[in-house]
Length: 338
Image 1 (cartoon, rainbow, N blue to C red):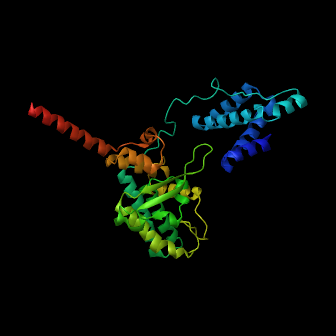
Image 2 (cartoon, rainbow, N blue to C red; image 1 turned 60 degrees about the vertical axis):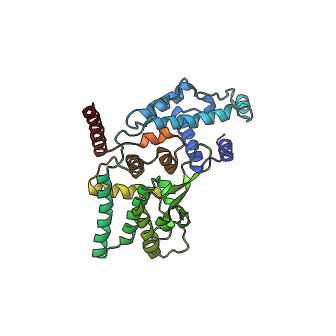
Image 3 (cartoon, helix red, strand yellow; image 1 turned 120 degrees about the vertical axis):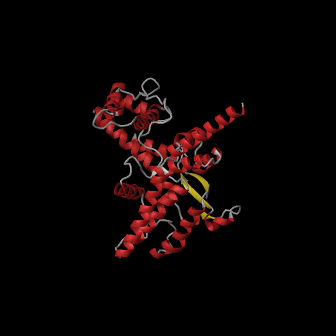
């Protein structure tokens, strides 16, 4: 059954990690229910999800909904008449698999945002402090001639690029040097006017989405130019196309980005709710504060709908206060005119 389901998913061009996680989930349910898939009942699955939602696991609704979708797909495969499993199970075990998940027992998606409510965009002061801290660490390492100064230079540039182009972690680490392009309409950015993202977030069953992210700030192009032209060559891996190489010539992993960000964040004493994705939140928020066209922001970050971009948008307290002051001044001006 599982081998057939894996083949079906591969033919749909699903990612290997998606396929393997689905297979592992089916095995977990089978162990939890102490029954084979053709023996499962609705209450077996409901008990499984109830345990996941309860302490100590406390899985989030979005995670549980994803598990439900995977199991629903597996059961749909088993009951599909184009495959032999109902006939096989009926003949061998006198039991047939049935679809146990539908709108009556699936988790309803009623909220656009189900993430951690503590997560937010970094304020400009937090962002400046974070980048300055990265720069100070490099200066300190250089002064002491400690091992790792080159990695510190790379990591500082990495996080600045993540913010300056609003990139997800996978988009960031999968960049190659030939993904940095000239924008003919903005020659002032040199060869760093466009960052081509070739591994954007994919939709279910689709290939990674590609997009070109335009450079917005001059300082960002300068950071990237300094890294590519002065810092990266020091690694000595000229044949390695990865923009962010490791000391052994490989490519940085997503896990490294998470761990490195957390290390710097904690040493600086920033809010522990911040993650590398906070840099993307900050990018969207700050473009919004600078009154960049919302349609351009949506295209820059690769969202399909404006409503998705809106979920990332939050304005700082300073911006709110200045906007409120301007609105009140306008109202007072009209009153004086009357």
